[in-house]
Length: 258
Image (cartoon, rainbow, N blue to C red; front, side, top):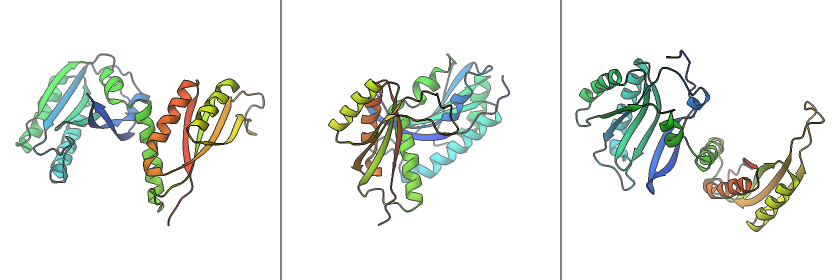
């Protein structure tokens, strides 16, 4: 087992499994250090909720005990030297996905939690850790889910400073490309989607950059929208970028307090 400190960068996003909504809570920081030696087994620990809501998630009544069980399982995983990679809530089930040096030892330790919460029996499944595929192929967000996570961060910051995130205002978006042809094609598509192109062209190096560096091309565009409903617009622009060999680099807007 490698003695590596696992970075902590937890994020929550809504995904789907078999066309049904699921809540994923995943440690994005784990991707920075994988693969690691010494964790040959993937361990899945799960409980069934007693009163899931219409989306299959826990309601206010069950939230407190669900959080308590989560804290207890996380503490056991840490004490065992295992890794908690993520937690998925889906169709009335909460599942903790872990990686361990000894899955059986982790199972026995986790079962102690069951004694504290007898109404919530734990189901444990142990499988071989196949190239960390549960983490990368199941837990880790795709490009659209990752963008939604970034949108949440910007929105949360705006709320913290008093922004009324439901109020429409111009929102500026940044996209980067390698060639002028791709840039112009993307700009045309963005105009079709209702964006005003504020600036488009070659990215000039800053004073501290190599003056001969090729930094590609940038589009700065604006469209009226609301931070609270920004996901669809950003997903459209992710598609525009992907279709033209580019990258969507996020958005910014003014703060509206009244």
